[in-house]
Image (cartoon, rainbow, N blue to C red; front, top):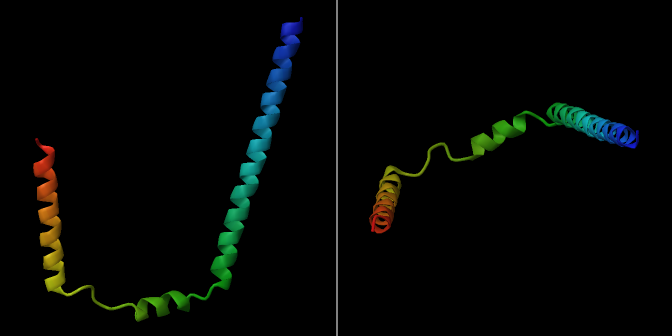
Length: 85
């Protein structure tokens, strides 16, 4: 009979532990969702638009892009050639 009681206590402890974890995760999900909604409500939407206007409209000039592509290609070629040996 003692084995049965020990098994029953173990199952009860497991159920309690799983219940506590479930409740904690539920509270965590609800709180994160509420914080996300609060931030979305109180943060002005124009801030994101102003930041995008202040950033440069075009990326780096084409000559820099070509130079960067050549450097990356040379590095990849050198890496591959040293790794085959």
